[in-house]
Amino acid sequence: MAVKAEFVPNQQATERVTAHVIWMTTGLSCDGDSVAMTAATNPSLEDIVNQVIPGMPKVVVHNPVLAYENGEDFMRAWYDAEEGKLDPFILVLEGSVPNEELSGEGHWAAIGADPVTGQPITTNAWIDRLAPKAAAVVAVGTCATYGGIPAMKNNPTGAMGLADYLGWRWKSKAGIPIVNIPGCPAQPDNTTEVLLYLALMLVDLAPPIELDDALRPAWLFGRTVHEGCNRAAFYEHGDFAREHGDHRCIVQLGCEGPVVKCNVPYRGWVNGIGGCPNVGGICMACTMPGFPDLYLPFMDAARKSKVTTIPARFTYGPIYKFLRNWEIRRHGDKEPKWRKRGRQLETGYQPRHYART
Ligand code: SF4
Ligand code: SF4
Ligand code: SF4
Image (tube, rainbow, N blue to C red; front, side, top):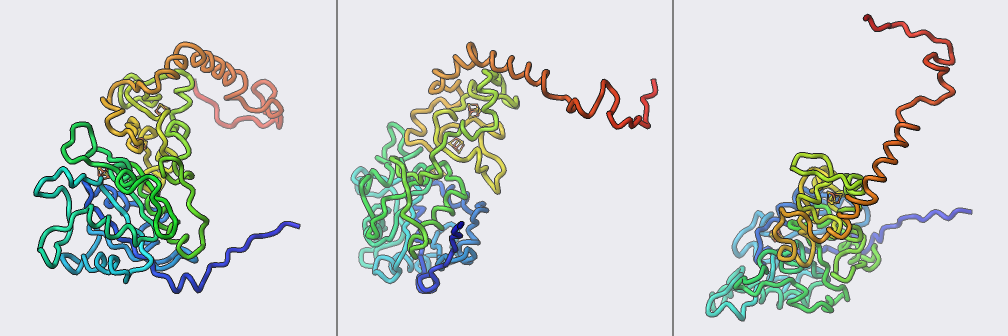
């Protein structure tokens, strides 16, 4: 007999827990991940803050890009989190962590002012204050996860990803490793889905989050761009575009999709629409730990895929293409034999409209 699993929300926990999200955009950041998140649809940010998903706890998001409050009113949640008044809370970092040991008498990044000294409180100090008290810590965007653009070679700030700052084996007080959601910006639904997942974990409604070696959610980053791309058949045929606007595979225009882990081609960008190579844009590997330095210059033919591009073009690709076209001619574009004898329908029906010649 089939056993039907029944979803029973942990009503008590759901009603008891309010999960706060303290979202720092004060890494070296352009705020692009916060702006992108407002386009999420599955789930949307509104779904999360309005608690519309069955079983989820109440979630309050404190994000300077989205907040109505400003100044000390906005900072109140940060001080409350530090004092243990917001428990549990998820700490989110957007932007890379600067090395304040290199900032001399100034500072690279800060928010809020110390009430005693009047001095700015650096991003590093906030991470040091809040990370040990957070139930989970999330790095959103490639700057926060691996350093990204601010950590390019020869940058003066010593910018780094959150795992390089706290340590790759760091765990929150709830025993959760840092969760990395890379992308420049992070795909909107990836961000909201992970926030929702962690909120459900906090009320024991989701199993421990599964992460890969780069601390990415395994179910979101297990496939390559190429494996989700709607141009992949052209690649297999060795049929490559020479200029932008061509519908064929754009690997020779710089697409790094075959070696990049990202779900954007099959998840789309907004509500399933878009997705870099699907809509004609090369994949420039923005989710990868080596972005951008290892993938420059972006618009040259993708070098990391050369090993497979050349055989696809000059060996099996044209053969596959020839054989598929042959199969289309042989089997495709035809009605089944039982339906017609020659050009006549088996039912004897005569067409009423004849072409006038
Ligand atoms: Fe901006 Fe990209 Fe860095 Fe996010 S990862 S803060 S979008 S530069
Ligand atoms: Fe792969 Fe990029 Fe070509 Fe798509 S466009 S098939 S991701 S190489
Ligand atoms: Fe970034 Fe490539 Fe994914 Fe587009 S497809 S979001 S460029 S990793």
